[in-house]
Length: 127
Image (cartoon, rainbow, N blue to C red; front, side):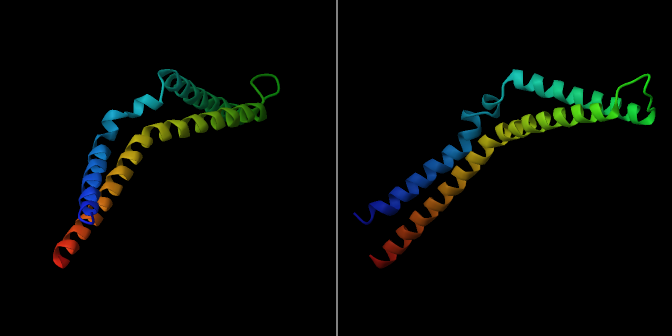
């Protein structure tokens, strides 16, 4: 019975290692990110650039008769930036999640296989 445990650890470790290597293929990053979110992120980025130019122009040419109030533009810019940053963080999470999971599975597999190999080696020395 004791001889089965190290072998089972090695087999489990190798299975986890293989699963970790295939994880990115089985669960691609695109599965967590939709084209609609991509379009929304692009639109928010475009709005950010446009509001940045508007704010720079309003601050360079302050006039009560023409143009928008720089404070209003800045408030809108901060609101759009907050929304953009939240959506971009979601994008990064969706992009990195499969790789992080695959790496975790690979390392856990290597560690379990190594522990099983060490126990098998020690068991053979004692037996």
